Image (cartoon, rainbow, N blue to C red):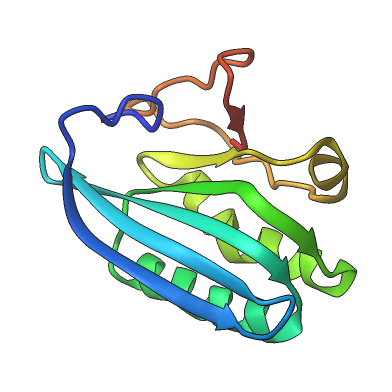
Amino acid sequence: MSLADLDGARLALAINLELSHGRHGASARVEVLEHAGRHVARVGLSGWVEEVAMGRFEHAVSDLEARDVDGLILDCSRLRHVDARSVLRLTRAVAPFAGRREGLAVLGLSARLRERLRWVEPAQPRADQEPVRAGDGHEWAS
């Protein structure tokens, strides 16, 4: 299963998380997709991410990591703001997925956020990993 091609994957879990509330609240939709025994999480962030929301996001992502999820798709298309103090925490929270079998894909970042976030590069892709192709309409982090 490739992160770019999730056709035929079964939705194994879907949950909406309120990361923070109020006028500038944040939320996340977490979906775990299963195909051929592999699991990929799709996390859609929305709203304004600040310290409290980032702490809850880190906890949710670490739970996915602990459950041996093979890859992560982070959808930021509904993200309105990321507090400057939370940028590094966001990067660190999702970085472990860059080295997983299905990898890490980041979609929907504004040009400003893309500039602010510095994604870690994996050491070397494994032989069983699909190579990352630039220019296919997705923002690949690995």
